Image (cartoon, rainbow, N blue to C red; front, side):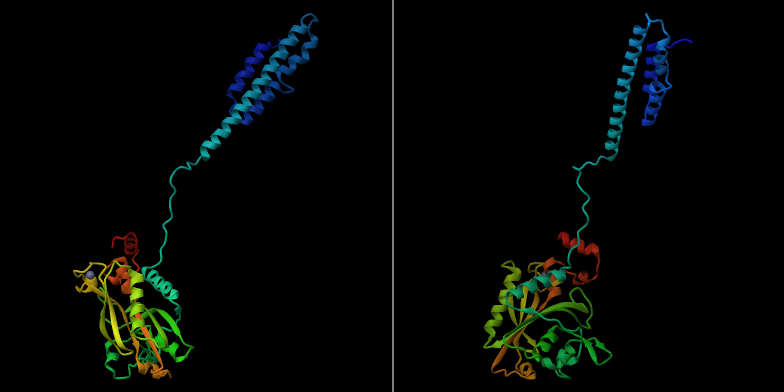
Length: 346
Ligand SMILES: [Zn+2]
């Protein structure tokens, strides 16, 4: 039998190794060229059959070939492993320096934001928040507030009636009536906030449902000076010096005297626009000294106890703050409008 030469074994091994691409290929190369039944092992076993003089040289050459094969096999194995790791890294690589995809952030409704601002301000002044029902008995909406049946003020506010006996409250003053009825200890400093309803023709600034914010401060010895001071403080805290405010006489059945507080229109800045009905001013606050009849209704002596009451049109204020003329947009839940408001481009 022809014995393969060490260089032929090496060539054939190198050829197979070159073509190996996977761990399985390597196992096969190892089995065929270095394994128990490989030509190399056969040649090593048959050394004994050689003439003694040829043996050392043949053994040295075979061992040298085996040693080279083992080294090259190991080098190839390491190379293939490294390449596999690199391929995996390339496949899984993420560029962490790329800017992320930011999720769109939500925001609170402008009316909610205005309400929270008002509430935070009034809490600082020692007021606490009370709540009341939106479906109300006419007593709290009218009678208790010096608006008896057939009183013209009852027609001023076209009311939504619920099955003829109850109504949707037309102002948050109902909550103040409920507080006074309980006759809590003086001083009373409470605010209420929420939805009110008017059966009105809807236009840019009038809605059938909108938000109000109201407060009362009742104690012994309160005067109109307390009222004016409180309103001026609220206006200054809300607007700083950016806007002019003005007081004007007003009529409300449940306060006497009554005042309205106008804010110079934030949308047009004075010349007049749709938001201010061309007036350049927007009435955002109504207030007054609580009417003696209201006090008597709830068992207080108006000679002893006085109080101030004020109501803020939260919706109108929010519209002014975000600078929109069409107040209705605030309630139409059109996200395009709200995104524009958020970006400051109504
Ligand atoms: Zn205006």
